[in-house]
Length: 307
Image (cartoon, one colour):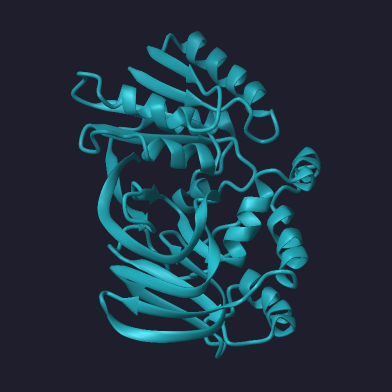
């Protein structure tokens, strides 16, 4: 049995058309499946929680949606040992699919799922930011500052819908970054890696805890990040005027920023950040809160995935 969690509103509503193609293929092949359609924000988490408590020995849980839907699903999984995660990407950024090497057509990705005879494990990240607040898991990245502000803005951006319509959705994050860079407030911050090694970040612009190498529609924040190495790669940029950061953007996009003096990339089990000014926090592009303290932690091999 395959259990599908489907976001028909993904890719500005084109997810519904894609799901019709997938469902017809499943029916034509006589595949045993259940489909659960999300109806509102957070619904995928509730569906994943319910499905992951079924008595099946193994629960193959397939996301048909984007990075945000996948994030909701992993945050609902109640039993990570019995759940096997799969994905057919229908989002605009599709950073998770890119990291997993799953960027074929929907039917090609369905074929891979149906033909799969094995599983692998990848790390998950976890973020904590307020006492009493439930920690949130992430698949791709979590971050504070400019990248989080851009992700928050993209959730309601008309620009994203327009660019998605002409198949240029990846440009949304770059254009919004250019728009928001000069209006944002920088913060003085202190980072601590693996509960030691304090480092000061004056005029911090952003810090991104990366599980995969790229976020924001393919921007390789941490070119050497590996979701199977039991580490997060924390990329931070600060200590420079915002006008200088503007000229750093091409280096980020081309993955040639690692040795620039204002860039810090640290592989670690955990990272804590303390800020003198509240920064926006995101997980996999989903807004969480405005924070002055945050802790990112790697959960090695937490998620089973279809190979």
